[in-house]
Every structure is written in C-alpha cells, then in structure tokens.
Length: 139
Image (cartoon, rainbow, N blue to C red; front, side):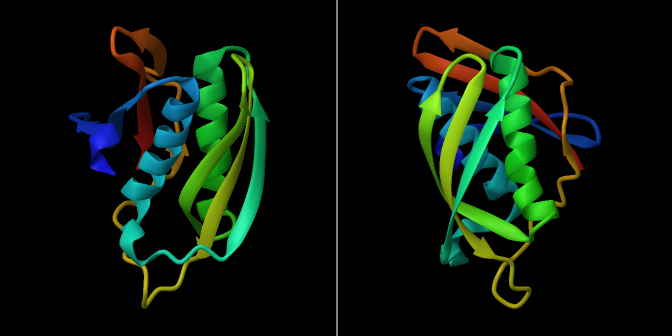
C-alpha cells in the first residue's frame, strides 16, 4: 500500500502525499491510505459492502468530505476498509463501493488514532505523471 502514498513530516499531525494515475485512482488511493494509517490491512477480511456518496464545492473540498465520510466508518461504526471501488466521480461528487471488516481487538492492530481530516494544506492537482493530493489528518 505504501507505494501510492508517502508519509510527510508534520508537527503533531499526519500529513500524506497521495498519487494516482487519474482522479478516480487518486480518490481510491487516498481512501486506502487513510485506512492503512489506521490499521494493518493484512488481517482484514471484508464481510460487508458499503455504498458511500459525497459532494464538495471543488476537488479539494470533495477530497476532504470523502475522507471524512470514510473516517466515519471507523470512528462511528468501527469498520475498517480493505477495498474501494470508485463508481462515479466528477469535480464535485464521488460515489464509491467499499469492502469493510468490523474491528476486532484480538485480530486487528491499530496503528494511529485519526481524529479528523483537515483542510490544512489540502491540495488536489494534476501532475506530469498523473494526479496528486496532499492531506493532513489530526491525530
């Protein structure tokens, strides 16, 4: 999983740079990076498919809202995401189908307790090699 995102130095928070070949790949990789930071994905056994749909004012706002919705699956429902399929994506809307596993203390190792997805230094941009996002998580 670490080949699609890089953990960057940031005081008291987690900051990542995510890459993707196209916008859908970028959003998929950002969601998977979030859950890779939360828990070791090796022991996940997806048992549930969840539909996620969010909107935003622009691609950066959409990224924050999308990651917040995914983070709620962990903080609100104790679900860990193993797979994400982007079903539909525009500059202001995304819908995805995620495969999730319910957290089990003896089976899942929690790496980081992420409290929130922030707008601090948020960036979604096209690069010469594809797409990139910069995201800061409050821990």
